[in-house]
Image (cartoon, rainbow over all chains, first blue to last red; front, side, top):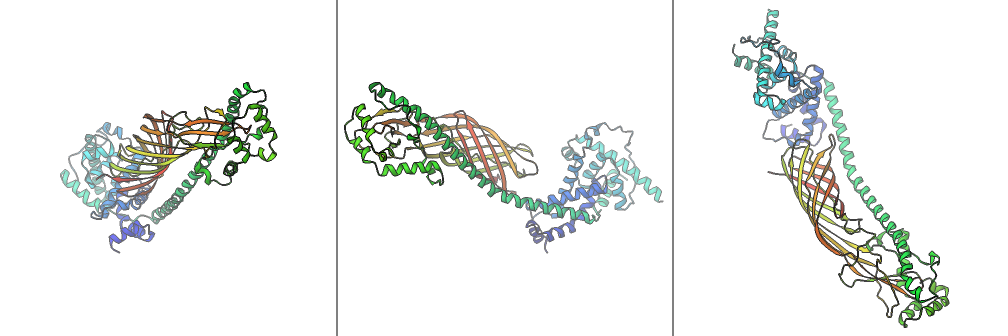
Length: 179
Length: 394
């Protein structure tokens, strides 16, 4: 079945087509959710919510765009909304003491597999994790992150630098252990 | 390793990351999709049920209004008849007793013409009997009309000699003929200044577009429902944020209907000619142009919208007028009264409330079923049901 036919069938509410669409994109989107979530359970909830929105709003999808990118955008928005509902303390983001996670200039060479790196990202504090994901993986600028999360761009930059420092430290530790 | 390299390497690794979700995720999605389907089906049936409930409610409202009007009219007629007969009492010692049993004085039915379709209404049965009597006028009554005005004493004597059959036509009878548009009095039973409209405004479910054009058409009622008509509106809606939208429109309305009036300024008289027979109603018409800035919101998790706003209305009301003649219970005299609801033109301020149910929703078009209510400083009330088509602005 072509993508357009699949989308058409999904819009008509055909459950078999919806399952096929889910099977095609769920693993990749689960990876996205996993990076934003604090736990596997939360990632599953995010994925579930996101696919409900995908099937509900499929008539708004323009055929000229890429379906995967469109679904990914929905998944990211869902992840951010879920974290918002969990009431992340964004107000305290500006006041994080630098001593907790000092910004280092030296970054290690990453020789971890994807799962290991994703696990490390998942262990980052909420604010660090979201900003790191949005900036590094999704390619958002700090101004855009500020708008999405309702924080100042400076705070976003600061969160990213600290997240990177903490992640680099964790990568170093893990690589040293594996040696 | 510089910052960009670390970032790029992280991006490459993480972009490729995927993980198979457990089966329970799909099962949960499947169950939720089924639930949504059931909900949509329920909403599909909600529309016809809402319309049916609305129609039943309107009919009930009309019947209640008629019953109330009849009761009020009875009271008015009883007091009015007594008042009308006072001058005659002064001139005649044999004037009819005010202690006559009320069953000899049936209620003159003020039944709007459009309500004739109602079946099973006891009020209508009385009205039908009365009409039948009017079509076959009693010769005694006609003789009374053709002869010269007898003295009050003679009238009393004549009425006393009437056979039992004649008593059956001694009911008060309404005869009406429209004579001029001269406004005389406002109807005390039906509030003419009241209009009922079907405010159909729009609320949105998905604020995809920032602004939309709106087109509305509604079947509406003005006042107590005696005046039926339509309302057309054109509007523009802008989203304030994801929860609220602001909407403004310009609309026109046209309502008309036959209304039967009581005799507020009756005068007793003795006719010298045969009087024309009418159904006792006059036709009234109201037209208006209005604007209603409205703020709207959607109830979360439902396709239901609620809106409330202000109202500025310019209205022209043309009330019918004429005279109305009623045979008194003494059978020899009649009471004539002028009726009229008057004309008025002017501005009024008010408020408007609407409730909407989204039926169709695409990225560019939305169709909603809406019910609304508006009231203004003149006491105009307009209620109605209609459809709204919302088209996203390019």
